[in-house]
Amino acid sequence: MADAALFEFLHTEMVAELWAHHSDPGPGGQKMSLSVLEGMGFRVGQALGERLPQETLAFREELDVLKFLCKDLWVAVFQKQMDSLRTNHQGTYVLQDNSFPLLIRMASGLQYLEEAPKFLAFTCGLLRGTLSTLGIKSLVTASVASLPTCKFQVVIQKT
Image (cartoon, rainbow, N blue to C red; front, side):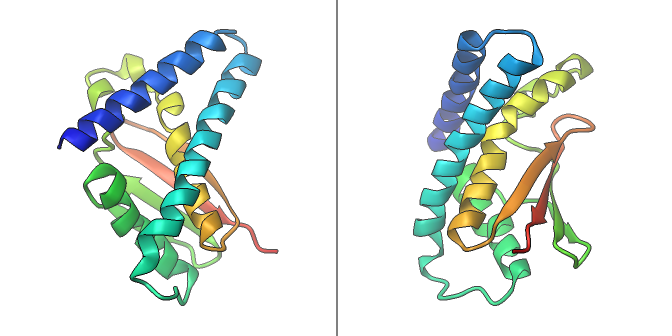
């Protein structure tokens, strides 16, 4: 429990600090901050991707890797499993968390909905970094229709 609170506090401070340094209200400043957060998440995801799946010798399919993200990775980072995983069986996966821990504190009103993307960039990088370490090149985006529910769309890039 204390680990979760510390992680949430650290994440909130990272977002606040980056927005303070790149306070340009235009799209350039916001893109820079989102890119930095996503890059930080990517590196953390790479490290977790090296350490977590040691018990699993090899994943047979992409779907097995995505199930690993929804269960093991999510539990390691957020102390809960992802609520839903859907796929079109053509390389696109949608991971849904109905009570995403980094958005719960903002869930009291719709006025915070436009602030949500900056709290999802790190996690997008986290997912992409873990997938990268496990040998899957991907594009990860996040969307929020109502707080604290969010969806992460993972598009596998075929080479």
